[in-house]
Amino acid sequence: MQLGMTDEQKLLQQTVRRAAQEKMAPLVAEIDRKDHEYYDTIRNFVQELGLLSLIIPKECGGPGGNLTTACIVVEELGKVIPAAAAILGGHYLAIDCIEAGAKEDIRSRYLTQFATGKYLAAICLTEPEAGSDAAAIKTRAVRQGDNYVLNGRKCFITSGGMADILSVFAVTNPGKGAKGVSLFIVERDTPGISTGKIEDKMGMRGTQTAEVIFEDAIVPAQNLVGEENKGFVMALDGFDKSRPLVGALSVGLAQAALDQAVEYAKVRVTFGKPIAQHQAIRFMIADMAMQVEAARALVYKTAAMADSGHKAELRKFASMSKCFGSDVAMRVTTDVVQIFGGYGYMRDYPVERMMRDAKLTQIFDGTNQIHRMVIASSIFHD
Ligand SMILES: Cc1cc2nc3c(=O)[nH]c(=O)nc-3n(C[C@H](O)[C@H](O)[C@H](O)COP(=O)(O)OP(=O)(O)OC[C@H]3O[C@@H](n4cnc5c(N)ncnc54)[C@H](O)[C@@H]3O)c2cc1C
Image 1 (cartoon, helix red, strand yellow):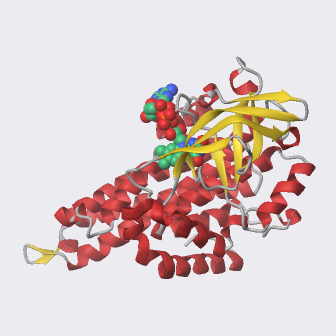
Image 2 (tube, helix red, strand yellow; image 1 turned 90 degrees about the vertical axis):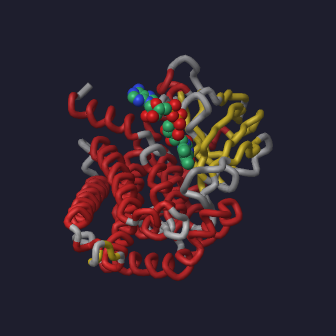
Image 3 (cartoon, helix red, strand yellow; image 1 turned 135 degrees about the horizontal axis):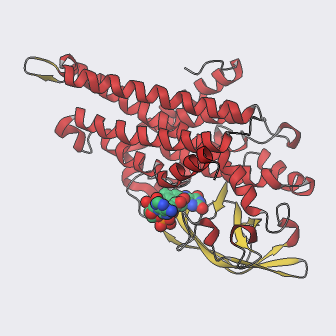
């Protein structure tokens, strides 16, 4: 339970929990096996629950859900269907980056569109040679009259081949690194945009991870978000909100794995007693419970900081909640597989799938190495 949840948040939490249990839990194993056959099912699930518009501000026609509310939703989904949580995470990040820099024109054209809850967004930053070093992107946007012409290739984009609206980072001032990148809103049906390779992933199956290719794609200049060459500032503001969401996803995943371990430990008998009676197992469970609660506390503290406009240390806490939460998810899911013994290694039980899902949380939205760099830089005021 999160301390200080409003009645509205509690109701939303229960609604998402019930819907995930009823509609997604029976499908999770099959989604893991059949992956692409379920991309639309998961998208429709989050859309029908009204979650695509959750964070759109009230003045743009949305419900105005804050980061704490988004974390509550994502944690619940992370327990049952982490793929849905990951899709929402990418979608919210794409919107948060737009919101970070959008002037009135774009707010009224696009945020109101997102408020209908029918549009899925993708964040297009990573490229084949620019992941951690995101300022090294090469996708070019060249101004021609009232338009920009985009050329380049993005990779590993969550919902890249199915999102209706793309938040695309492209170079407008070559040679200037982070100071030469701008953010554009690009509509899916723009001529010159195509979907490349769709990845076959270790885990988090049911999310589409795709290349997005731009070949002389013409984007109206009015779709530049904010000012030219300020895209990176918007990306960083967006990440301040997306990283706690990855932390929340990780907490949900770790909690669900821990719950599985507790139940299994009560019924699996070795040496004449349930393994829950062996101290080695009890201590593992106790350690896991402490880690999950600590990760949860960090996530909701960070979300509360963001929601109250406490910006001074937000970047550090955003990285800490993502990095710590995902390390906990990886450690806990690995230990849960251990508690299940040989059965944990088999696909008949859900815990090996949870371990594969958890691995992604340490990689996307900035690897945990990069987050440790961010945290250390913040401590040393580099
Ligand atoms: C399933 C999935 C979904 C994704 N979704 C999206 C999305 O929707 N949108 C998007 O734009 N991107 C997305 N990404 C991309 C993701 O953010 C990048 O994969 C990630 O940032 C790492 O970049 P990279 O893969 O190029 O690794 P690299 O940058 O090549 O890193 C390789 C290794 O080197 C380490 N490393 C790199 N630099 C340093 C350093 N300076 N010091 C120490 N260690 C370092 C890294 O931590 C990593 O271990 C997704 C990725 C995956 C796998």
